[in-house]
Figure 1 (cartoon, rainbow, N blue to C red):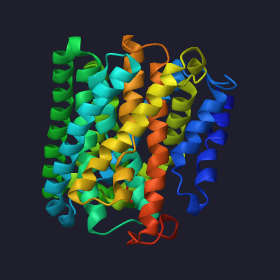
Figure 2 (tube, one colour):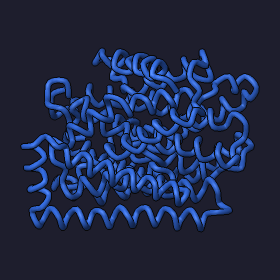
Figure 3 (cartoon, rainbow, N blue to C red):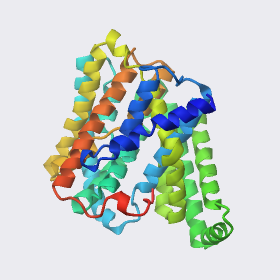
Amino acid sequence: MTFTQLAVIGAVALAGPLLALRRSWHLPVVLGELLAGIAIGRTGLAYVDASDPTFTFLADIGFALVMFVAGTHVPVRDPALRPALRSGVVRAVLVGVAAAALGWGAAAVSGVDHAALYAVLMASSSAALILPVVDSLGLGGPAVIGLLPQVAVADAACIVALPLVIDPVHAGHAALGAATVVGAAAALFVVLRWLERRGLRDAVHDVSEERLFALELRIQLALLCALAALAVRMHVSIMLAGFAFGLGVAAVGEPRRLAKQLFALTEGFFGPLFFVWLGATLDLRAFGAHPDMVVLGLVLGLGAAATHLVARALGQPLALSLLAAAQLGVPVAAATVGTQLGVLRPGESAALMLGALVTIGIAVAGGALAVRAGMVATPPRESREAPVA
């Protein structure tokens, strides 16, 4: 990895904002960044090597930050969210039951005995994608508020379940690792809440703002890296560490100045780098040798949409059911961990990511439908201050 390559990565990552620039298209920024990575990675020009240790480490930092910001984006302190929590949990469970059936069907169609893995993938909802889309489109109202706990519960549950289903032989060790990381994040929440109630956090905030020390940012990044290190040590995806810590910080309350700093750090450099790296890891040429994996990818993507449509039975609007089908973090972790463990068939990791791309397209359509249906409560993000996550 060189500075020249970093410059090229930063330049091609601008494809994300460029594709998302036209509001009427309702495209998420990450889509252009993924396509840019595909163009300069294994599938395209092979200009960057996604297996380079430095590139991979920087991407891991980006992944942790993306999931952390996604966690802080969950409005757990919003009083309006609490009445919707029960219905959101019920919808998430209903989707999970449907995913179990469709996961078995996807395994039967593909001939690959990964029914449990496919079920987890189809049941997942990506907070890292859905919450920024909700914010950028200015979506609001009771139905949208009801969507948020469903997404948070599904994302958290699938993050925990993934290591258990992708490597069943070591499920006990994976469960212990996940419990350890979640427990550590909970302990940090208790400590942060105690500091908040004692007024120590406010004192640090005032000194940091007056002296331009950025103390809160430094402390949060140190804690995030410590949790990520624990996750790596326990052989758990750093996705869990980032999301769990983000939820804890959101529950305590994140200062707006810190939120802006984290947003700038993530969206300005590490987030785009991660998504370009992710695109660069994909070898879509493998579909040529394994065309059956194309079918698997399409089945997973369309199956995720069908799975989330069962929430319509509980009165959820069609647009929000489609939006809830968006996947990112869980398929990424499944492809990465599954490749490392050697439990995936050739071309299967690309199929997992193809399925995720299909769900992103479906979610984009869902967001556009939500706007047309009038589920808009606030002006678009460009006309407001930077979001809190």
